[in-house]
Image 1 (tube, rainbow over the protein chains, first blue to last red):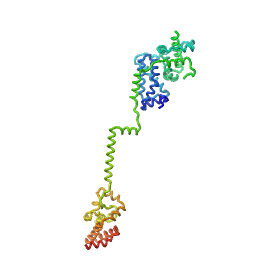
Image 2 (cartoon, helix red, strand yellow):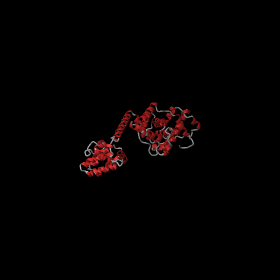
Image 3 (cartoon, chains in turn orange, red):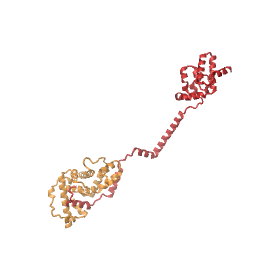
Image 4 (tube, chains in turn orange, red):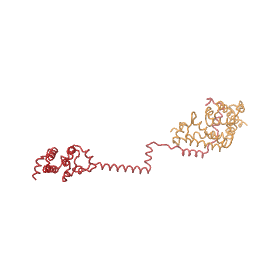
Length: 188
Length: 207
């Protein structure tokens, strides 16, 4: 069995047909990315774990497959995102992803950045996390889907039901801000 | 995905991928994998595999063994019933069929068809079926016996059988049934062409 060569979709189909080990391969591929996406988006490890568990259990117990043009990865992150939004709604927490955000206001000029500064980005996990939480929720979501979900921009646009150009600008602003925040931390 | 040439922004992405921390707890991994194993749909094995698996289960082994035993017993019983009767002088019913048809009501025909073993019985009271074989196998024997077998059996018929028939001829003659006696004699001549039936008849008349 050439496990690494099997696509996510074929692994899921095999699991649905009773091949238990196929799920283990699928899980190993996506466990870290999905968890970090949820952790970064929610900002709380307990909530991230709860939604993470719900997401995988939903996948285990469901008999459905990714529909249409969605691949497994998009489908998985869509489930996780919906579960997190459901949790916020259930507990009366305001959904930050629905905030309308003026991208231009938060897009500070980053002309001062140079390659030397890039090399000195902080590697401290707490500073990385703090910088991430400093981003507006919608920018953070796009960045996390790109960084940990490894989704491309059209997939992110489809998943978040956002125009592609908006996704591009959110990602660009998020990256600029993170670079600035991490660099500043190191320089000061 | 976007541009082939890495940009400073892409470096941030790469930086986060390399240095971000956060792993799902191991107990959560174990729980989810166990749940996946537990709730995995049951894989349907092939028909042959299911058959082999069923055979390996003790209760099915007993069932199959019982079934085979019953089948063997039935086969043995059936085989025993199909064996031809081993009567020493059982005549071939088919051989007598023409005679029986021609003179169905005649006791002569019955007498001819009667087995040698039944020679002590009076001809009219000894129909072929009564002695040849059990009633159940009578029709089967009649259909299955072939001409060669009949000829062989008649050829080896003992002399007492012929004598008995000749005595019947004498009885018929004495009873005034000359035609019946002649018919029986003709039939005997036809059946046993190598025997000098006339001489034997005379001998019997003298005695």
